[in-house]
Image 1: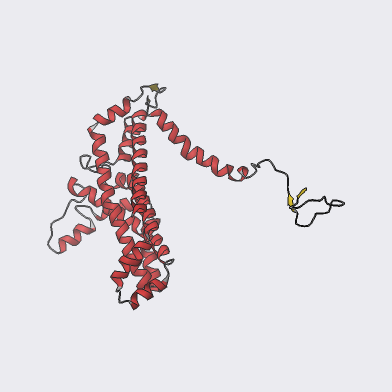
Image 2 (image 1 turned 45 degrees about the vertical axis):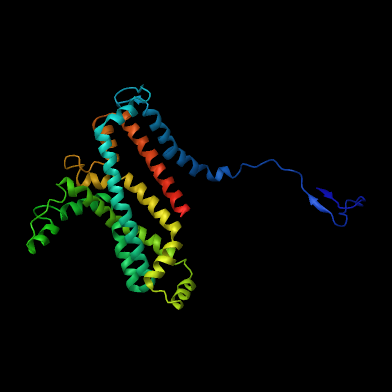
Length: 311
């Protein structure tokens, strides 16, 4: 160890002079911390990074799982541009997202606000728990149950409609209603999850803001729009981005409820990727679809983040 002094003079017998500060010799950088994150980093690379790179490579090949991939360059992407089925699946995915994301975000926010401001008691805890039950159910189970409830002949919904004199509706057999019904089931499935996120965010809002606004004559609705909503902007960004990513990745609910029908009216992008890869054995073409999905989700998420931050 060496000593750095502010004045002149040398220390006697190795003693530190007055006003001196200790200076340790420079140490080489240590990479010991990498060993602690190596397991998580390895899993991330194997599960996320490597599949993305492999999908990007296969999207430039003609690969059918029955032989070696052959390089075709951008041919798969050019075929996507001319594929009416792909454009339809992409459009229906956007429609599904446009229905489900705003509804589940708005409902979760309103219900969380009511529970947080009005029912901070056992009843509020019961409501939160009841709305969270659909979240813990698998998509396959939820889709199967709703397919039975919406059945044309013996479904509970049409049975109730028949009791009031309304004819049975083929909810999942008509192109005009099938995609909307699947989106509404998604809202029912996800709203409890986003409700918990919003509720946790509302607990961090200072109570003094509401008390001060009450003294100024602000009512509950005005407090909601001027205090609650602006304070939850980061939470809303998280909810919208998660909801958008999940909506673009929807597969099991659609596959269970409609299988993509009627007449392809509920085929989403992930279902089209599945059909191309495992039914038509066109892995290269399916990988090109997957890369388009990756880019679309990335662009939408970045645009949403920029929009919320600008506001």
